[in-house]
Image (cartoon, rainbow, N blue to C red; front, side):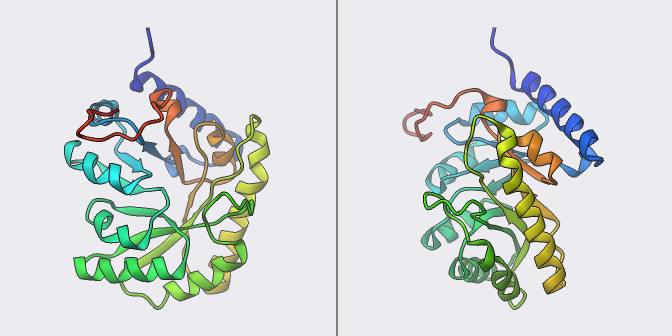
Length: 239
């Protein structure tokens, strides 16, 4: 019989606690974003019943259809690439954006958030590895964007996010997580701003990310099992 989300979550929480003990930090400083890409509202409801309260979506189109059908008490984060022409669609549905990768996107979020009468916390996505296949700012562009954000009224940069290269050995991701933490610390000191959040670590490497200071870990398959590989849509009932 396959494991339930609650059983998988218990294992994840034990691993988080062990990683925190190794790093000398409190587990309360680590929060899970349950990545619900390709999974339908019934899986989200199971996750909520298991005690997960923060869900992450990668695609605007999927999020727009799915979120209204899910339990209303949840907090949603946009964790995937966000185009400027999709900002208005998503800002009314999510509490955080993890994937700001340009000044123009930051300015668009600021403008739309102002029109909605809210302040939007965001993270800057940093392409620490320099891979051409990944979105994100070059590390040396992070500081100027932090500085630019200081002049905006409706958006708050609260930290950084990264996706390291995938490798079978989770330990290979450590240098990238460490580099993101050091970049965050440098920018925080240089611009005298608080940047408390580090969104890093996924199902294959979250233990290492926690050891290196992650505050948000983005977990999908370790909680929900293998994905279908197909975008969830309301019309197709999740296929």
